[in-house]
Length: 234
Image (cartoon, rainbow, N blue to C red; front, side, top):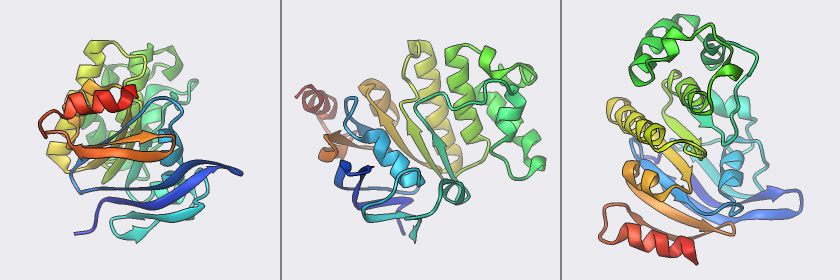
């Protein structure tokens, strides 16, 4: 079976500045893979390259065995891939409902989709007419994740979803991601600095330093947490 996502020898960056150096990883169908690293290590750059926002300068990117290298972002998204960027990429002046509908190509999917994500985030169905920009920071992050989930993707790219969130909201995010993977079999590549959160949801991990993967392994392996913490402290 082809990986949900294959990144093989990828090199990318901004103009002549190379940020990601010959990076390789794969995410299996139904797997949650955590890419860990400090700020400025190239994690977000890698996701933007996968999505087509940045040019692929070398290597391969495949989604379920088919190349997506060189495709513009809107065509990548049509391959049942959902991207949750680090910044709160919501339309602040639009309503909660409008933001949720943006990812759907078939309006008939909104009602069943809303019912499903309402089990994860009960406040959303009651706040559909509220402007997204008036939600709290944590609520905006939940709306951002809900907008990805409502599309029923086969692969999710999630960038620093826990940044700035309170512990109770982080735990809710963890429960949602685990439940969605268990229910739908969606594969996920999550970029994180929050080690405890990442290890609470992920099956495998890799550590990215200065655009290169320096360590990888199974989350369930003995001493994984201690080993990762040591890697990130260097």
